[in-house]
Image 1 (spheres, rainbow, N blue to C red):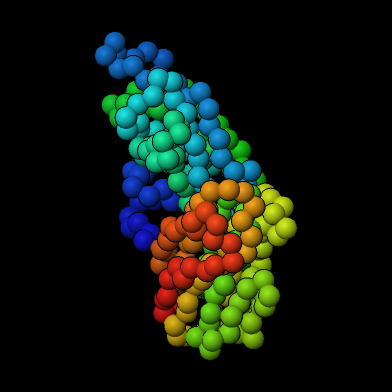
Image 2 (cartoon, rainbow, N blue to C red):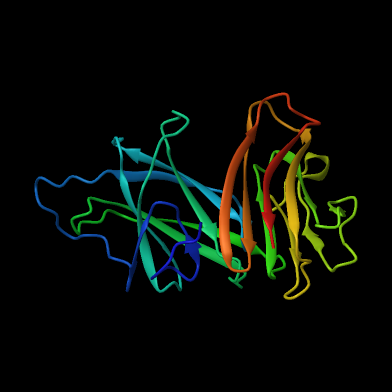
Length: 256
């Protein structure tokens, strides 16, 4: 769920700490017993939508067990510190970032540096992402998935009306305004978004389903769904097993 108290106006990073003020500079000199690794590679998606998820991969030399990173965004009011994890054993550390729904910008410059948590900071690496705008309202549901697949977002209104690429608008005002992955063609922001303008979302129970329309490469397909409902934010992680093309997963049910 969304954190309370002081937080970034741009990013939400699970299990991170946020500190207001300028991003710390790379340390000119460090104690002899503080040896920071170097970021030799920083990769991520080409773009993201507001309310979408950004998965960064950081490769360090030398590797560390649980490295701590400084993560900042140009124009933000502060910076995050967060630990990376090599979840898939590929030698790189994953950092999951969520772009807040209210962010309105054309691009995002993310800077990442290793730190020892004692005030010493290594050299930064930067990554620039294009931001693809998507609709916001009292209810906003955003699906993010790898660019080499075609997943579809389906949301059932309290009336039973099913919003999806087949029915991209509903009588109540709900709308699918971002669709990705058709014919296995990657989009800048590999995401789908369904929202209701302020005051339009019907009261009642909703159901969120993700459909694996087409698997365009081998392997499991991991995805996230970010739900914003009257200001409350929840993020759901799930995956389709390899070979699940044509199947669906119910992600969540909620009441508005």
